[in-house]
Length: 425
Image (cartoon, rainbow, N blue to C red; front, side, top):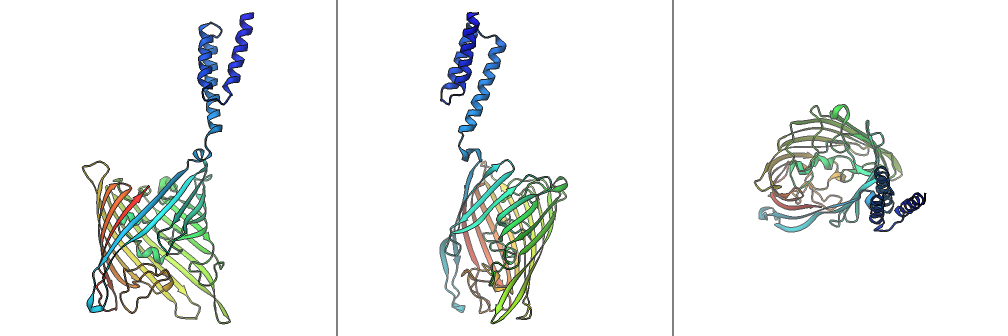
């Protein structure tokens, strides 16, 4: 009887100590259990049961004392892109040469899980005076109804055209179609319901259909009223062989993948000239095609922006198109790759407020400085042979020779050599 009482007391003390948040408590309790078993106070069954309870109590204690940031699965990421641009001088047109270094992008971001069904994403840009102190993305994703769609609230992509990464086509700058599309840098603030498309999980019907429907604050161009009527967008994509890899630098050597997509967008804006207030209308139409297989990638996209100026001036229609093909080769050294590519683009831009970067410098009297000070190339075609050396999947050196041919303008030599290093972390 006395032995039983002593045993009960020691076991109770052991259980009590298991809840004490000391670094060595668990180890001490296990040693005590071993001693009780050797003395015959605990049977093998009781010993196993008490040891399992100690493990559960320790796990619960660790969960309580874990860092809140760790429990959110927090991830910090970023991108830097130093670039050198070279354009030889053209004395016949009195154009000076260009040889300069710049920081094309310098981004830092953070993402994490608030719960298993809620995640957040933020990204900040501070590369230059044109976009310094710029919050690129800031949104929260709700995945409670992930079988049919995700709800994304905040500043985010406006996916009217395909998510056709510049990394896959390998050129150093965004394609012209992205500048014609809605939003500033392709982004807006609002709410989106989306599924699939390489960005919002797997698509419907075994990843063969992706879609998004969104409503965003204010008009695209915000000519005079940032709180004008809303901007609405919608898109659908068909991927009969399953969704595209979503791999930005196309180094997964995937089986055959195919995507055909189309999207639309529309917005309104109050515009005042003198005492007259009118409503302007902007509409977007986009179609895209993508194909990838074993390191090969082909992508093309057409985008149109139509602006109805309600009789204040002639309506404007801006069109852009690109087609690019790339091939990535695995090098003998593990983790290193070589990519080669060629991209063709055409643009006919009649909306000056949408011009951001269509060329390396002013090419004619028709070209004007864009709203951010970038030099424009509003009508013409360009050719981009590119080579990319990937030291690792996150460190890449790109060399691109861009040939610009402006329509209906005096020929000016604007052929450019871009050398850009990209480092992701």
